[in-house]
Amino acid sequence: MSISIANACWATSGKMIVDGVTLEIEAGKMLGLLGPNGSGKSSLLRLICGLRRVESGVITLGRDDIARMPRAQLSRRIAFVEQQATTDAQVTVNDVVRLGRTPHRGALAPWTARDEEAVVHALKSVGMMEKRMQSWHTLSGGERQRVHIARALAQTPTELLLDEPTNHLDIQHQLDILSLISRLPVTSVVALHDLNLAAMFCDRIAILQHGRVIAAGAPETVLTEELVAEVFGVRTFIDRSPHHGRPHIHFLAAHRS
Image 1 (tube, rainbow, N blue to C red):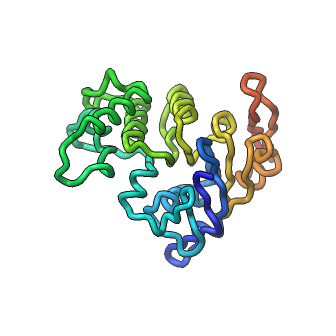
Image 2 (tube, helix red, strand yellow):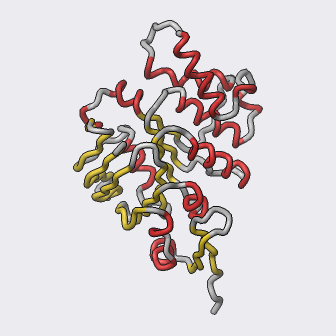
Image 3 (cartoon, one colour):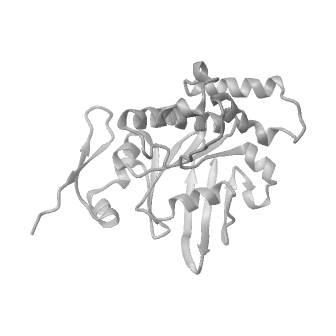
């Protein structure tokens, strides 16, 4: 397994946010984290990448316990794309992607051919090579998200974590971003809100509720009408899409009294 989580717990202000989570994430696969707001998706991502430490339980990358890994080693192994943030800095696409090389370089280390190769490869992977010298402020939301992913890829990680990468994007860019992520040669863990997009692109999904994993597995086994009603409070009809063979969720309007 690429990522193994065993009974991970984390709390803040006396409230348990991640409560005994156990998951196995296979190398090279895409796992979707689903659940209502406040279910613990973002907190779990931060535990996996080491931005927060578990209070109990263990998270390992391969055979390495992340609690015992030096920060620089962990940063070279795992990349995290947070929800989109704005910036007033006058930077180019190239400037942003170059930041991904920080874990591989000393404070005064010169820029190397290996650094440049990693940046170019990342830009090409997300289709932004031709816009590498373009100003950040001129980019669309979808282009900015591609640049964030390129910055993460410039780290040359083996694991990639993304917190709602399709947030605030139109449907075309949502499809483009998730299609891109699904094709990357890395293990990816993606927090999502859209159940149909998760079913369409993720190899496996995990449903979180009140900080606990209540179901995990292939989309076709996890996404049932009963579970969606229990966790999300909505009525649905679920069938198989004739286009991609994955579950397709039809949301049913609530009956008016």
